[in-house]
Length: 101
Image 1 (cartoon, one colour):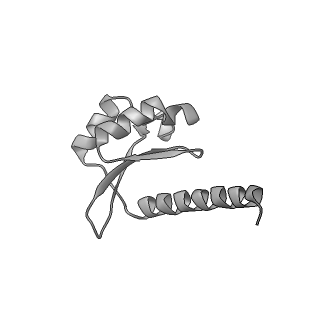
Image 2: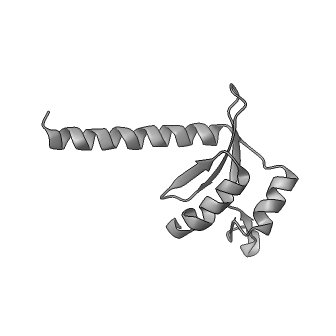
């Protein structure tokens, strides 16, 4: 393969890997605790697409069943970010994810 083809193949593989990791996060999605949800809503990390234009949390939680590691995720149809802490995920929502909506 020439370098040009190899470059595009590598980029496609990276995209595939990202989709796979996102699919794993979605598969292991769990509800936010009332305290976590309250913090997300208070910090206005929200989408306005609930019933009657209600605000809904723009951050959700995933727990790996094997390692018990918790990740907090925010995403749009264009991008996603996962973070180890809720506050980091909220900050990433405001600094990046919201702009991709």
